[in-house]
Image (cartoon, rainbow, N blue to C red):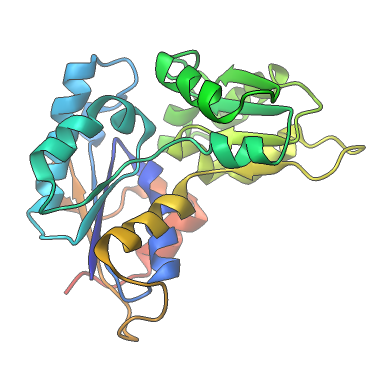
Length: 261
């Protein structure tokens, strides 16, 4: 089995590790666009074209499913990706985990990029899944870029700024950008109040990994019993994992994987 993932940058690492956890035998194809970063300020048409380009590079490796492990691409390019590749190649988008966060009761906060915060897309999800629950939308300018380049000082500044905008009594935080899952524990540490129950973080990696297996008709488990390989594509070029990826546990875990067969 082979699963491809696309993202603007290294935000695809958590979903890739989630796939590997469910099916250690799955070959992984990671296709991102470091030449085009950042995607957030780009027009919808530009994001669509870049998403199609890196998806084409991944599809050339004949995966069984393709995960759009990027909130920006899922919001702007998912219809175009599905029109281009389905039904031959199942496309799995990433949706902020607002529904499970709201199911646990409020208040909750949604950390997202400035472009996503307050967008009709996010507001629609809040209206659909979080009615009656207190929700605070928190813009996180610069956080995705800081994570992408493993800029420790910039990560600290961006997390602190977003934490200052987050009500102290929130019970759960939705990580509305896949990059944020790489620094989830730093976000938790910045928000956890000593007199309140443990804060719950809701990412999307596990859900999209499970959905990819469902779409391929596969089940979680050891599969063939052999470890799957790894293919990395950066803006259409065969490459190694970016140096910054090794800063995070997810990147180090994937770096230990042998090249795809």
